[in-house]
Amino acid sequence: YNPSELLSSQRMKSFLIEMENEYDYVILDTPPLIAFTDALTLAADRIGVVLVLSSEETKIQVCQKAKQLLLIVNASL
Image 1 (cartoon, rainbow, N blue to C red):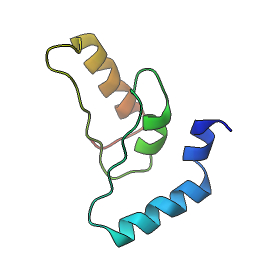
Image 2: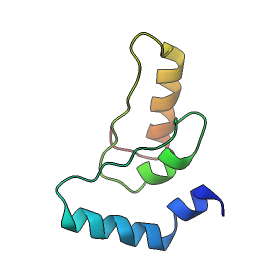
Image 3: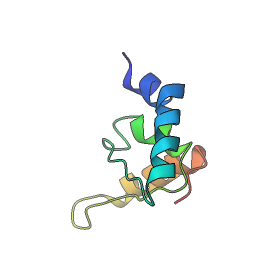
């Protein structure tokens, strides 16, 4: 199966709603945003996104691209 299809499936959405009803916070760790679409698929449906960067390693252009991609899917940063 394609991971993006699984993450955007109704079953996954139902699972996340169930977890949100059960817990105060639900944190999903995803692969890197630029290399994979998993985070974007989830960000489009979620309440908030925390973008984690390495201050000494991540280039500013990569940070800007990641933010741009998240804003395209209306993610709440």
